[in-house]
Image (cartoon, rainbow, N blue to C red):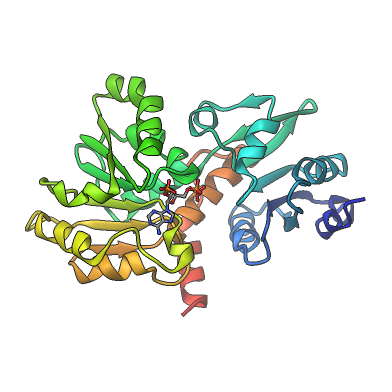
Length: 302
Ligand code: ATR
């Protein structure tokens, strides 16, 4: 028996729609606070909790949650791929992402969606940085990057270059999204991170989609960051966005020192949560006040 699943037991909240975030680890998650704020905004009382699953226990934990009346789950590390594989139905953006971060049931079937990419582009645009027509340098080629490429392309950047330590992984993402890139007129290409010094044109938006921030490191050697500074366009603000959130990452500090505006992924977290809440509660996309929630979290962490 999976005793851990009893951490979040929908039967304990019989009068409320129960949602949660499933992960390992999950104790640190800000999602319950964020969803509680959205519920207050729209005056729809729900219960949102944390659901820990042992590695290898994702599916039984999910099944128990829904069998006990749960309404929906956000899925976080390391279960997004397992969630994708569990679903009988996927939204177009989940299909493109290859991973699922929103899960619910319809007529006993699992439905999966992905709001990470929407969360990223909304947060970038709120900073405010325009993506349309601009060149975006994406660092990394793991699941996190694959999950956001399609929504990024839908904002019509002129160019997206994916630079990764392992070139073959960046090339695989390019191959996967090339047909959509050609339709949208986005120049999509891959390069080895080691060749970043060969870049000659400016990228006003650089996104760190690697997990380096979680290891306390940066994907860039100091001279690579310096090179990006040298090719920055004067008179145009440039954004260095780290998809990791929490304290200032090494990448952010490095890029700030080079004159970039550095942002962490906290806004992306709030935006992707808003989209999940809107999907579950059938609210118009973008209708929740995410700025207010983001401000509350930032204040509480000072
Ligand atoms: P996630 O699901 O978070 O994307 P992942 O699929 O394991 O995790 O991918 C991690 C990404 O971070 C990869 O692109 C990885 O590069 P490799 O493909 O070469 O392994 C990248 N990465 C992790 N640590 C890094 C570091 N210190 N410097 C550069 N890239 C790093």
